[in-house]
Length: 174
Image 1 (cartoon, helix red, strand yellow):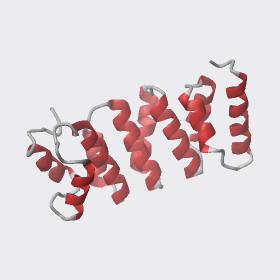
Image 2: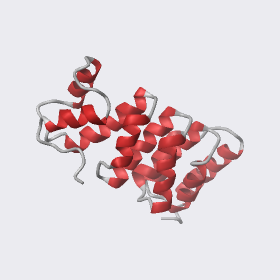
Image 3: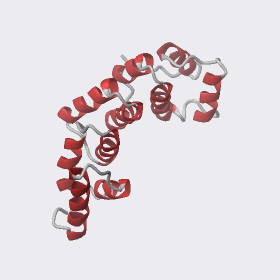
Image 4: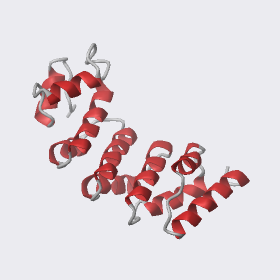
């Protein structure tokens, strides 16, 4: 698919916008990712280190939800989820981590307990509940978030573990 002239043109426009310190149309970025356009992948990887949180966020979503990431890139995602100064990037990185790993692991639980931003914590909660949605029926994720807001469930590993245990679900299987 690297010889597609339309995708080549879109990638060239995105690179030009980046070089001019402008932001590209996110739809164009995701068009390339949706087609798993390999020439764009290297550009997306480069942008994970960009000074612009917008470029980091869009390229992280493009990579994380459309490409299979190797160990090196997963380590970068882990680093972003812990250390990026922007909560949207950290939240996105946690979501990418969960999506790529397809299991709940200690890293996600660490982010849940230690990130200072409620938005990031809620994203990790969403990742966890998405994995267990059929076991917690008839509750929806919205119901669980309301229980957290009401103080019925604590938004941390202990609180979520206790909540899931009520449905016979163990948060970690180790």
